[in-house]
Length: 238
Image (tube, rainbow, N blue to C red):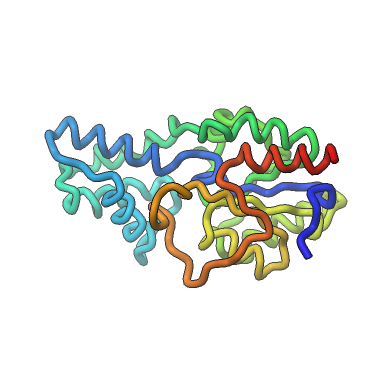
Protein backbone atom coordinates (compact mmCIF):
# COMPACT_ATOMS: atom_id res chain seq x y z
CA UNK A 1 0.00 0.00 0.00
CA UNK A 2 1.41 3.38 -1.02
CA UNK A 3 2.59 5.55 1.84
CA UNK A 4 1.34 9.06 2.47
CA UNK A 5 3.56 12.10 2.04
CA UNK A 6 3.71 12.52 5.80
CA UNK A 7 5.63 9.23 6.08
CA UNK A 8 8.79 10.64 4.45
CA UNK A 9 11.69 12.62 5.89
CA UNK A 10 13.77 12.62 2.71
CA UNK A 11 13.20 13.12 -0.99
CA UNK A 12 15.94 11.92 -3.32
CA UNK A 13 16.04 13.36 -6.82
CA UNK A 14 17.39 12.51 -10.19
CA UNK A 15 18.66 15.83 -11.55
CA UNK A 16 19.35 15.70 -15.30
CA UNK A 17 16.03 15.22 -17.06
CA UNK A 18 13.91 15.56 -13.93
CA UNK A 19 14.95 18.98 -12.67
CA UNK A 20 17.27 20.18 -15.44
CA UNK A 21 16.03 20.25 -19.05
CA UNK A 22 18.88 18.25 -20.55
CA UNK A 23 17.03 17.47 -23.79
CA UNK A 24 16.34 21.15 -24.37
CA UNK A 25 19.91 22.12 -23.60
CA UNK A 26 21.37 19.42 -25.80
CA UNK A 27 19.10 20.17 -28.74
CA UNK A 28 19.61 23.94 -28.48
CA UNK A 29 23.39 23.66 -28.82
CA UNK A 30 23.24 21.15 -31.67
CA UNK A 31 20.64 23.29 -33.44
CA UNK A 32 22.88 26.35 -33.12
CA UNK A 33 25.79 24.44 -34.68
CA UNK A 34 23.47 23.29 -37.47
CA UNK A 35 22.27 26.84 -38.18
CA UNK A 36 25.82 28.13 -38.38
CA UNK A 37 26.68 25.34 -40.81
CA UNK A 38 23.51 25.86 -42.85
CA UNK A 39 22.32 22.33 -42.14
CA UNK A 40 18.74 21.17 -41.60
CA UNK A 41 18.25 19.78 -38.09
CA UNK A 42 15.77 17.42 -36.43
CA UNK A 43 15.82 17.52 -32.62
CA UNK A 44 14.15 14.15 -32.05
CA UNK A 45 16.55 12.47 -34.47
CA UNK A 46 19.42 14.03 -32.54
CA UNK A 47 18.07 12.71 -29.22
CA UNK A 48 17.68 9.21 -30.64
CA UNK A 49 21.26 9.26 -31.91
CA UNK A 50 22.49 10.70 -28.62
CA UNK A 51 20.78 7.90 -26.68
CA UNK A 52 22.52 5.24 -28.76
CA UNK A 53 25.90 6.97 -28.54
CA UNK A 54 25.72 7.38 -24.76
CA UNK A 55 25.40 3.65 -24.23
CA UNK A 56 28.31 2.47 -26.34
CA UNK A 57 30.98 0.30 -24.67
CA UNK A 58 33.53 3.14 -24.59
CA UNK A 59 31.22 5.51 -22.71
CA UNK A 60 32.87 7.99 -20.35
CA UNK A 61 31.49 9.99 -17.46
CA UNK A 62 28.80 12.55 -18.27
CA UNK A 63 29.00 15.32 -19.33
CA UNK A 64 32.68 15.05 -20.33
CA UNK A 65 31.50 12.22 -22.58
CA UNK A 66 29.66 14.73 -24.78
CA UNK A 67 32.90 15.43 -26.64
CA UNK A 68 33.02 11.78 -27.72
CA UNK A 69 29.26 11.67 -28.33
CA UNK A 70 29.42 14.63 -30.68
CA UNK A 71 32.03 12.86 -32.77
CA UNK A 72 29.71 9.86 -33.08
CA UNK A 73 26.47 11.67 -33.95
CA UNK A 74 27.71 14.66 -35.97
CA UNK A 75 28.24 12.76 -39.26
CA UNK A 76 24.78 11.21 -39.00
CA UNK A 77 23.22 14.66 -38.50
CA UNK A 78 25.28 16.30 -41.21
CA UNK A 79 26.99 18.54 -38.65
CA UNK A 80 30.59 19.72 -39.00
CA UNK A 81 33.26 17.48 -37.54
CA UNK A 82 35.91 18.61 -35.09
CA UNK A 83 36.61 18.26 -31.39
CA UNK A 84 35.99 21.98 -30.86
CA UNK A 85 32.30 21.42 -31.54
CA UNK A 86 32.27 18.53 -29.10
CA UNK A 87 33.85 20.71 -26.44
CA UNK A 88 31.25 23.37 -27.19
CA UNK A 89 28.48 20.82 -26.58
CA UNK A 90 30.10 19.75 -23.31
CA UNK A 91 30.80 23.28 -22.08
CA UNK A 92 27.22 24.39 -22.78
CA UNK A 93 26.09 22.07 -19.98
CA UNK A 94 26.94 24.72 -17.39
CA UNK A 95 24.20 26.89 -18.90
CA UNK A 96 21.49 24.22 -19.10
CA UNK A 97 18.39 25.56 -17.43
CA UNK A 98 15.98 23.99 -14.95
CA UNK A 99 12.47 23.21 -16.10
CA UNK A 100 10.34 26.27 -15.35
CA UNK A 101 8.71 24.66 -12.30
CA UNK A 102 11.78 22.98 -10.77
CA UNK A 103 13.30 25.63 -8.50
CA UNK A 104 10.01 26.82 -7.02
CA UNK A 105 8.80 23.26 -6.41
CA UNK A 106 12.05 22.29 -4.69
CA UNK A 107 11.88 25.36 -2.47
CA UNK A 108 8.37 24.34 -1.40
CA UNK A 109 9.39 20.73 -0.75
CA UNK A 110 12.49 21.76 1.20
CA UNK A 111 10.24 23.27 3.86
CA UNK A 112 9.08 19.75 4.73
CA UNK A 113 11.81 17.32 3.62
CA UNK A 114 15.56 16.92 3.39
CA UNK A 115 16.30 16.95 -0.34
CA UNK A 116 19.13 14.78 -1.67
CA UNK A 117 20.39 14.95 -5.26
CA UNK A 118 21.43 11.73 -7.02
CA UNK A 119 22.94 12.44 -10.41
CA UNK A 120 24.96 10.49 -12.94
CA UNK A 121 26.60 13.81 -13.86
CA UNK A 122 30.07 14.77 -12.70
CA UNK A 123 30.49 17.08 -9.74
CA UNK A 124 31.50 20.11 -11.83
CA UNK A 125 28.23 19.96 -13.74
CA UNK A 126 26.13 19.29 -10.65
CA UNK A 127 27.48 22.42 -8.98
CA UNK A 128 26.15 24.51 -11.88
CA UNK A 129 22.80 22.69 -11.76
CA UNK A 130 22.46 23.15 -8.00
CA UNK A 131 23.07 26.89 -8.26
CA UNK A 132 20.53 27.22 -11.06
CA UNK A 133 18.02 25.39 -8.85
CA UNK A 134 18.62 27.72 -5.89
CA UNK A 135 20.90 25.35 -3.93
CA UNK A 136 18.01 23.45 -2.31
CA UNK A 137 19.84 20.22 -1.50
CA UNK A 138 20.69 18.88 1.94
CA UNK A 139 23.23 16.59 0.24
CA UNK A 140 24.28 15.68 -3.28
CA UNK A 141 25.74 12.51 -4.79
CA UNK A 142 27.41 12.48 -8.21
CA UNK A 143 29.17 9.87 -10.31
CA UNK A 144 32.45 11.30 -8.99
CA UNK A 145 31.33 10.58 -5.42
CA UNK A 146 29.92 7.11 -5.96
CA UNK A 147 32.21 5.79 -8.67
CA UNK A 148 29.21 4.34 -10.46
CA UNK A 149 26.01 5.40 -12.23
CA UNK A 150 22.37 4.64 -11.71
CA UNK A 151 20.78 2.13 -12.18
CA UNK A 152 23.67 0.43 -10.38
CA UNK A 153 22.30 -0.45 -6.92
CA UNK A 154 25.65 0.58 -5.42
CA UNK A 155 24.82 4.22 -6.14
CA UNK A 156 21.63 3.91 -4.11
CA UNK A 157 23.35 1.97 -1.33
CA UNK A 158 25.75 4.87 -0.74
CA UNK A 159 22.80 7.21 -0.35
CA UNK A 160 21.13 4.78 2.05
CA UNK A 161 24.31 4.70 4.14
CA UNK A 162 24.35 8.50 4.29
CA UNK A 163 20.71 8.62 5.37
CA UNK A 164 21.43 6.09 8.11
CA UNK A 165 24.26 8.25 9.46
CA UNK A 166 21.75 11.10 9.47
CA UNK A 167 19.44 9.08 11.70
CA UNK A 168 17.02 8.01 8.98
CA UNK A 169 16.24 4.92 6.93
CA UNK A 170 15.36 4.04 3.36
CA UNK A 171 11.74 3.60 4.44
CA UNK A 172 11.64 7.36 4.96
CA UNK A 173 12.79 8.16 1.40
CA UNK A 174 10.63 9.09 -1.57
CA UNK A 175 12.70 8.79 -4.74
CA UNK A 176 11.68 11.26 -7.46
CA UNK A 177 12.79 10.88 -11.09
CA UNK A 178 11.79 10.94 -14.73
CA UNK A 179 13.87 7.99 -15.96
CA UNK A 180 12.18 4.64 -15.85
CA UNK A 181 15.47 2.98 -16.77
CA UNK A 182 17.86 4.77 -14.40
CA UNK A 183 15.60 5.33 -11.40
CA UNK A 184 12.04 4.08 -11.23
CA UNK A 185 12.69 0.41 -11.95
CA UNK A 186 15.72 0.04 -9.70
CA UNK A 187 14.19 2.06 -6.86
CA UNK A 188 11.26 -0.38 -6.86
CA UNK A 189 13.59 -3.37 -6.77
CA UNK A 190 15.44 -1.82 -3.82
CA UNK A 191 12.21 -1.36 -1.88
CA UNK A 192 11.91 2.42 -2.17
CA UNK A 193 8.69 4.31 -2.62
CA UNK A 194 9.04 6.23 -5.88
CA UNK A 195 7.51 9.12 -7.80
CA UNK A 196 7.68 9.30 -11.60
CA UNK A 197 7.86 12.81 -13.07
CA UNK A 198 6.82 12.14 -16.66
CA UNK A 199 8.46 15.12 -18.33
CA UNK A 200 7.81 13.79 -21.87
CA UNK A 201 4.10 13.21 -21.25
CA UNK A 202 3.18 15.26 -24.34
CA UNK A 203 5.80 13.59 -26.56
CA UNK A 204 6.17 10.03 -27.84
CA UNK A 205 9.01 7.78 -26.85
CA UNK A 206 11.81 8.19 -24.32
CA UNK A 207 13.81 10.90 -26.10
CA UNK A 208 17.40 11.02 -24.92
CA UNK A 209 16.86 8.49 -22.12
CA UNK A 210 17.30 4.77 -22.67
CA UNK A 211 14.05 2.80 -22.85
CA UNK A 212 13.52 0.37 -19.97
CA UNK A 213 13.19 -3.32 -20.66
CA UNK A 214 10.01 -3.28 -18.59
CA UNK A 215 7.81 -0.38 -17.53
CA UNK A 216 7.48 0.05 -13.76
CA UNK A 217 4.20 1.42 -12.43
CA UNK A 218 5.25 4.13 -9.95
CA UNK A 219 3.81 4.74 -6.51
CA UNK A 220 3.18 8.39 -7.42
CA UNK A 221 2.93 9.86 -10.91
CA UNK A 222 2.99 13.52 -11.97
CA UNK A 223 3.84 15.30 -15.19
CA UNK A 224 5.66 18.13 -13.41
CA UNK A 225 7.49 18.97 -10.22
CA UNK A 226 4.80 21.55 -9.52
CA UNK A 227 2.26 18.74 -9.52
CA UNK A 228 4.24 16.89 -6.85
CA UNK A 229 4.63 20.00 -4.67
CA UNK A 230 0.91 20.77 -4.99
CA UNK A 231 -0.01 17.22 -4.00
CA UNK A 232 2.30 17.29 -0.97
CA UNK A 233 0.93 20.59 0.29
CA UNK A 234 -2.65 19.49 -0.26
CA UNK A 235 -2.07 16.18 1.54
CA UNK A 236 -0.29 17.68 4.53
CA UNK A 237 -2.89 20.42 4.89
CA UNK A 238 -5.78 17.95 4.99
